[in-house]
Image (cartoon, rainbow, N blue to C red; front, side):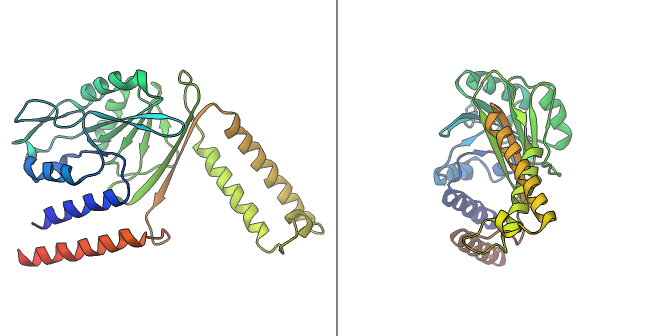
Length: 283
């Protein structure tokens, strides 16, 4: 009962967060097909998996992919997961690589970017990525590490690792105006640009209203030189982003006390915790 309450509560929270799509992981199926069908009926977002098969029908249990449209891009999202021995009475699991590639082949002509959501072990990821064709990103949901400097492999696939168990959120920003060209990794430049913005903002803090930063530091040669250097670096990096046709940057965000909770979500989480604790005591 406790696990079912938690699953229902998380689904309601995802609805409130306006979740766009969910890759079904092996653990999501542990409570059986009947209960997961109930969860699907609650969800206001699509659930995908290219390699989970219904034992009852012998057909795919979920749509293998979802195409999400933004003002600038059509993004194809493909999902794969590990097998779960506890769910094998209701589901079987096809090979993740073969299943992912089949889904990629189906959507590649119609999308600008292909992202594979992979609930796989770290040790499986290298062979999985090396076997893929025509994918742009693999987002690993079971990684025990996170990296602000993603690595792009020789086949053009970039691995995004963002920790495990919800300890990090992540922002993946993609610009693609040329579908044929490769997507350049500008994550280091994005970090440097953010640092430059912070330095300029710090210099501007003591400046009185109605005065420019340059005017304020006019008599301070060192600060004037620093401001000029930072401004030149800012302009140079902004020009790089403006003129690069295809690029991405990725920023991991640690979910620490520095992140302000949404009050509505926080209320739902606290209510869910209380309900789960009550159910546990009842057991």
